[in-house]
Length: 294
Image (cartoon, rainbow, N blue to C red; front, top):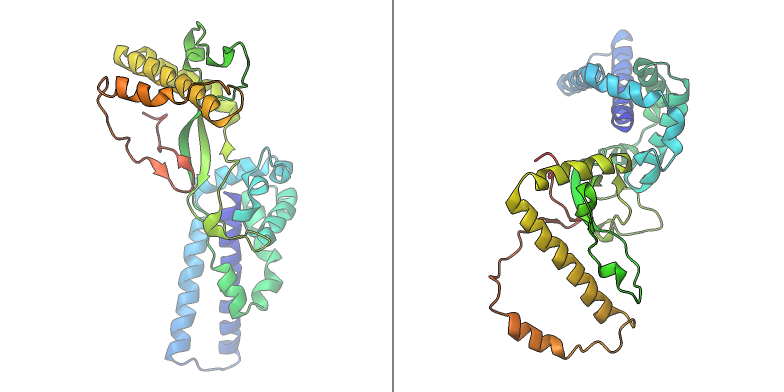
């Protein structure tokens, strides 16, 4: 939220500066032509819209909460701004960090931010304005499911479905809610191609994992059909582990891979084949929005 506010603060500072320059010319007796008058009206319109957005009470409440711990802004474990710099303008980030330590309120923060852009807005070029036109990234909360990490052992315990109760019965799957970017990273360094970017370390709400697991389990446990479906899902996941180990590692060099063809033929008619829905987001893997809310 602070980044979005800072982005709007910069735009408001620019429009206010442009409006001041036009008004100064009018005070000096300069007569505006039709195009100049239209441009002045546009500056006023943009500035009013930005000031209205910045005055939104809900946004200011969220900003006030963020300002209570300004030190978190530089902590990658607490701030998505610090964790994912490839999505954010470092010039804005630096000013946010400075103003956050000074501000006693969101209003103080906005005033500090707008003042901090005084030099930039007064000397802005077309190239600068093009750079400033890059909007804040689009970020969405998504639900996700992953297989829990495992270590191959000779006793095959990594394949053992142990007796459990409650959310621990979700093993070997781990449910999470994460913040995922649906826009490409505009601030990659070293000439990296945004089109090839893959977020291998998404922002997850680790502190909510127990609550998420409990919520998922409560839903499954309350429905006999879901319990049966989840049992099949667990069995399938464990079988995947078995075959991945057999096919991708040297752990079982004696695994009879040639028998897989016989297994395929023997089981071909045992189940109805159903295509999987295309839930995949090309940027973020297999994720479906709002799973946990349902």
